[in-house]
Length: 212
Image 1 (cartoon, one colour):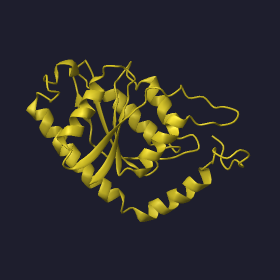
Image 2 (tube, rainbow, N blue to C red):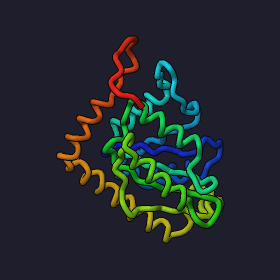
Image 3 (cartoon, rainbow, N blue to C red):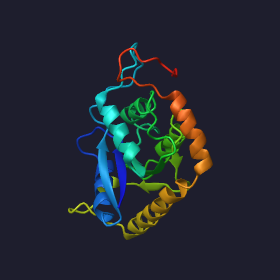
């Protein structure tokens, strides 16, 4: 069974984005093993003299590296993704590059009616940056508006049309993870770049090979 990492793009104690991912975790448990990953607890990104990466970011990178794909659920604040999610992605491209060539599906839930459409567009730009270079599933937005009223008491989505949309996108995502694995020539080049950019921060005195 495929292992999928699902990143909760919020550090709020109660988040409908976390609720959406928990719902997907249960709904698709027969098709994939979805492991929720929290960004809460990560320090805000800043370059340091010693280029030290937080242990939490290293653990996140290891799980992403071992996964067949990543789902990110983002809230939308002022037409953008939350600072904590942006910071997490910065840590995950600071000498470590677990998202490079990794298939990614984007989802989002918001209290308003737009369902994080602008935040998802911004997130696509960030994931497509040279330091991250994730494989983002095209034409695949899942926008959950009015999320406070979207779930029943069991945590299931009430709107059947939303369920059908989510089912179709998740099925496509499973196919997308297979397809991206066949891009051998691109992988070979990216693996070379990944090695060139890699910095081993775990050994004192290691020579730095890349500058960010």
